[in-house]
Length: 250
Length: 153
Image (spheres, each protein chain N blue to C red):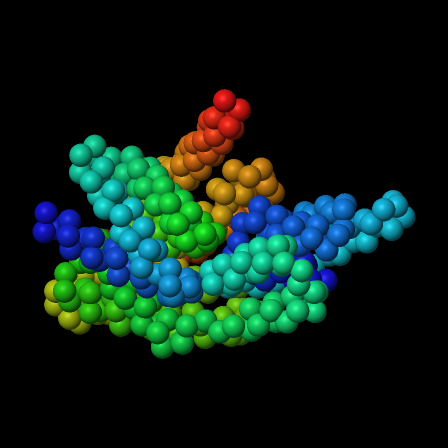
């Protein structure tokens, strides 16, 4: 069903619950279905439709797995729902457009990796690093992003991914701090943590709470907490090990 | 002043990076980047003048919220596109690190202090976005009401 697919794409790309429910409802209404009830959570969407009699109720359930933030998809589905409801587009045409949206590619890999490097570099300077810290952070950030992508390919969950990436970042920056003079590890590690910080769950959970979707608000808040803990733990384990081996004094 | 300018540039580029990673539509990237940088500058200024990073986060989040609402209205887009990359600069990533470091030093007092500050900053970001959302809702309700009253008159 068309509305379901639209909702699915939106939820996967990291939209708020309110927007997903609203989109599905609008699309169904514009198809002439009078009675629509939508219940969406970050892991599944339930839609129940009814034409005229109570015996005609049809329910769809869509389980949502794996998500990758893609704001372009949200924006395009948003516009699609607007044009779909205002014009008399057929369901087949709509399906084709959604296919197109779903298969659209993100920015080239190299560009994304370089921008990840830029993020870590800039944040290491913001957190009090110098020019040398910037250079180290750029390299470490680039490698961290590559590792994160690599682990994602093997469908390793976000908790372990955050842990591994931060552990690696901590190791690299401690190594750099030990071998190159003028590099301190704290700003470099903080910069790398910023790359994986759970900004989207935090923002979305607040907006879910605001629109009265308590369940997904709590779910996303918990996700944010778990991610932060995994990041801190990853960096912490390596620093502690380094300290126990006598590399640095805390 | 020079310091503020460099910070502005750094926040600009950091937000640009996030915008590319989260794949903001190319035509909205400039607006997005400015939203993020303005949020960070607001944070810095409040932090300097009030001496409290928590208040800084609050006003920074308010600024991001306000700017993204304006941008969303201007470009007729979902507000999420501007909020997500913009707010990321304010998330206390460094504080998470220092909390953990204090924990490793088994300095519980320090850890509690920095940890609570981290939580409060996250809460302040939430509050900022929330307050901005509420204000905008009331504002539009009032605008619609005055318009309808005018029509009646």
